[in-house]
Image (cartoon, rainbow, N blue to C red; front, top):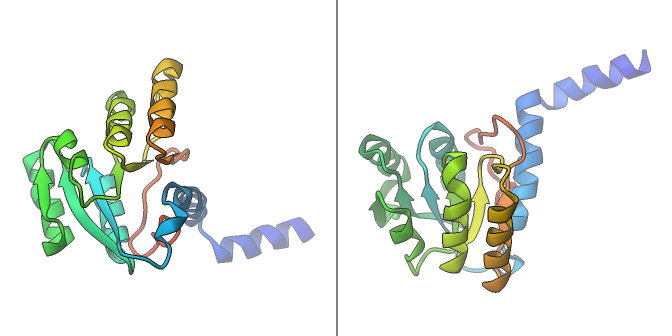
Length: 178
């Protein structure tokens, strides 16, 4: 009976989706350096603007102290849709991720890309001195994962990975990301 009451009470506090989101979002907060707390706005770029990328974009755009600075997707329709969501703050919209990484006003990038591309893009972002948050679980490629870790260490960057399958931020729930 006690266990059953605890389970019922926990269901009233969080849905399964909310629990998974908060678990991933709390881990994601480690991707942003402590030096940013209480300072200038955090300028985020997004690569991959499918449903996960757009949902995360909306959630982050609602946070105080966060500016959506740059957007990237190979699909022109997804890019146009994200531009309308981000508003005038996004001063760079491109189909090339490396162009986004080279943006000097960008602090960190959110990668919502297919698993096959994410390790290469994460390493490239670190090389351009950007912190990285990956919205998908990593592919099992130890050699490439070591390369990303080495690139992050070399440039003193943070790389954080959402370890939850099906991870997506709900609007209004991105506080743990920043």
